[in-house]
Length: 95
Image (cartoon, rainbow, N blue to C red; front, side, top):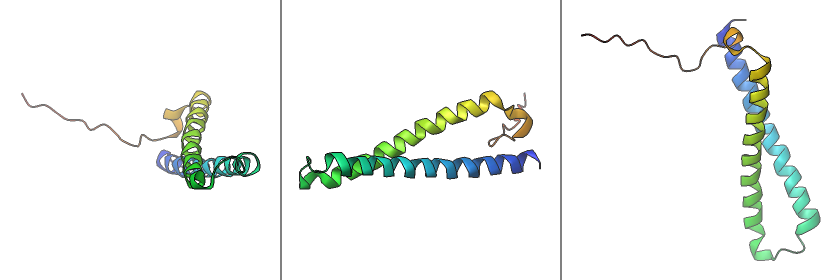
């Protein structure tokens, strides 16, 4: 496989992993809320709690994704296996 295919597969895999981690965190926080806190929270604010859980799941998955990416960068030589997504353009200045 060439570098462009490796880059594409890595981005696709990382995106799917990030979505999966977000769903897991959301499910875990929702179960925790239902089992522990739901009885103590008034009915009027339950919808806001689920919105907050959703936002917390997205933010937590972002930090987990960054941590995992840092570990991968330490173990794998990025330049050897992956192509840059945004290549710099060589702009010649005419003087």
